[in-house]
Length: 152
Image (cartoon, rainbow, N blue to C red; front, side, top):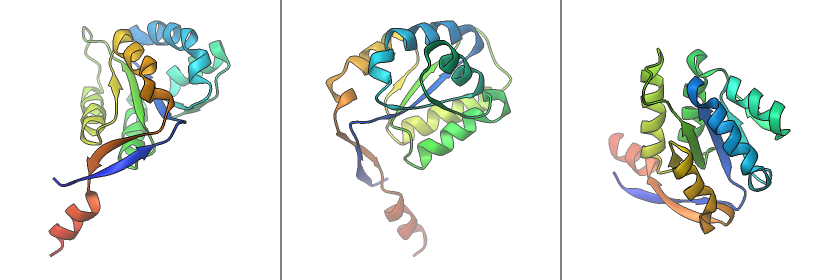
């Protein structure tokens, strides 16, 4: 597929998602990085967003709980170009009933070429990157060109 460029602003739109066994780890990471995160726009699936807001005071745009459609809501925001970074602490040892939603979310993040962290180490690398707090460009699928070619 042809590519185009999307500019990510200095203020990033960050989705925070965590499976049940990883919520404490994401909450601890969020507390540690609260000074950096407070200047960005945060989104989260239901329970995770509520925990982050309650324990840090950070403003979080809460979606539904993951199993209730929250993962799909985050995926839709990614496809619409409204999420710049996905921090998703998932549990590789426990299957969840909504695994297809999780796979779809990760597929969309990969397709739209946004940075994804699946654990604390990768989240630290992303948030410590100079690009995290500055405007940057990413290559994304040129959907309009794709659509134009399909409609010929």
